[in-house]
Length: 265
View (cartoon, rainbow, N blue to C red):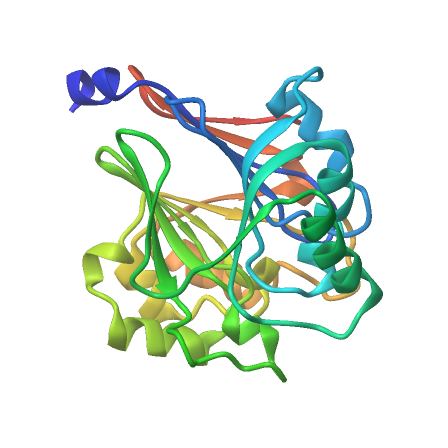
């Protein structure tokens, strides 16, 4: 196991502390940089610098899981300040000023705008792949954008990170019925919808069997995320629970020492 991981090189995945929202930064051994969602407002700018390098102004891929403000808004200052090669997203849209500005900046900056769906594979270097698990083409629910969130598994060697957006239990059931189990099993899961009780169903967690569960939520948020129900289900499947509201940004590293987790608080 360890010799194989060493040969693959170091991959770093950071669940960023952006308050009540989601933002995840990934850097692969081939120096491919990926930002999944941007959180609300411009909170991301404080937590992004330490993981990108304060003088770096390039990001290869921006991935928008769905266009709700707590995932979308932070991508606007990123598009203004960074040279972005491509945006990956579905056809999900939202009638909001933030979404209109997001699309305007994509056009103005000549960023590649690529639509991805279930079954697509995004190569992130020689040994890192992103497998898109949801939504299927034609399955968009514009009235419930959470349920059309991009769900993907980032695979690197023998390790997998499961990225779940804001899906609820009904969509988790659809994924269980349409995706091979090996693409759901993961060492680390980004807990869906900030730990809402309507997500992270027990059957989904039992198949994923994560060693570590990362919850992205704001301190003292109005929704009570993560909820006691979800925390209990995560404990039932034996996952170590880490929370940005308690630990700050959470960094996962895979290298010669296996999986290493380093919260910032």
